[in-house]
Image 1 (cartoon, rainbow, N blue to C red):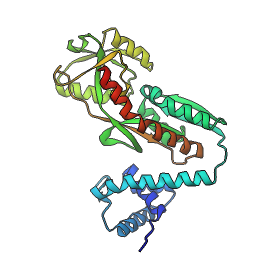
Image 2: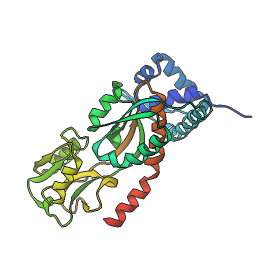
Image 3: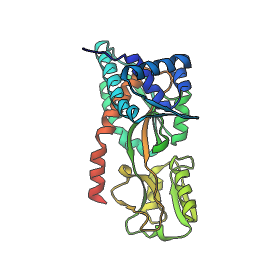
Image 4: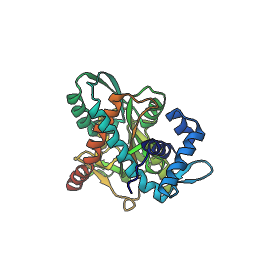
Length: 296
């Protein structure tokens, strides 16, 4: 007997899973909290399994919920692509795209492909630290954004998860110095509290050599052997090298998630741009890691 899944229930489930809260999901979906709860319960009844583990402060996915979330995203993506293909109209207007400084280059192929396919959409790129970008998406000041989070606290759709690594100039011994000379891209960078917390836990004193929103300036101080920094593994320039803890006495760092964030009200151009980002940045992760392995 053929049975059909209700995509409206699945969309509600994915929204709750992305935000860890039925209240937040209700606001985003313009529904009452009770209606969201009922839809999740109906989906659990249809699938005959528990999708969420209800805890005091936050909903967490059950093992079945984690497995179903992957397929649920695929179903919604295919549904949305079919609708876009059938009802396609040339996209127009402006698109405000947010990106952390270190992800501008990885995002470039998606931006180029989108611009070529949709020449009537004017793209404005906003570079900022991840906490700022997250706030801008929530307030609707950005139409779509990449945001970096500690993997265990990711919000939105996880595009991929990468290691956060220590980086130094080739042949540099800056990592041996105490206090440890640090060069950070921005004092509001999502990496900063994690890095400083890890150093504090390890009892390693540090000092700031340079802080700027210019990632090339940060790289220059590292190339000159004046400092060390931290970057996602796929963004490490080929002429710099990673430092592997704990051999060198530096603490291990947690992985970070690169997430796709959309505001409560999503415009068609943002949905389409998000599709290009998924295809580009999800597919190129193996290639970037292979490149890194060859030069490290």
